[in-house]
Length: 167
Image (cartoon, rainbow, N blue to C red):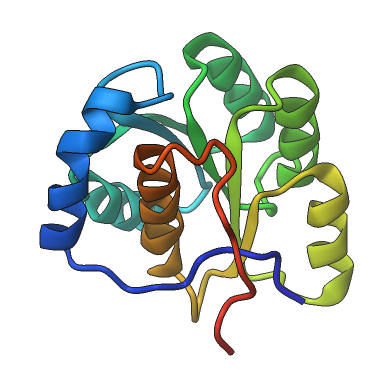
């Protein structure tokens, strides 16, 4: 089961063309969309940071590898978007998700995990995840989700039009 998210593929050039308007009309607090990464694997975290930092209009503002560190830093930084693994050592990404949506419901949360069965997908949906992706096969879709939110914002659409991802 997937949560709805736009799954269009866009080059960095297409995204860059959208950034000028995005910066003029942005609902995000700064000129960039601030993204926080919650991932306990250093290799995956570094890959995610590299991928996201290459997107015009996106700035990685921090990361955490465990539940308590994530909650503390997210509450302090108030990012626009959080990418979240649900399996954290120590802790639970689902508890992080619940905390984010309770304390800061406007923060977008993209769950990126290897635990993709319906039990976890439904739990994340109930907790308020905006997107749910398989880390192994859908890693690059995080980029598309961010682009869709930037694009929806520049078009004046405060709640992005989302659709079911391609299978």
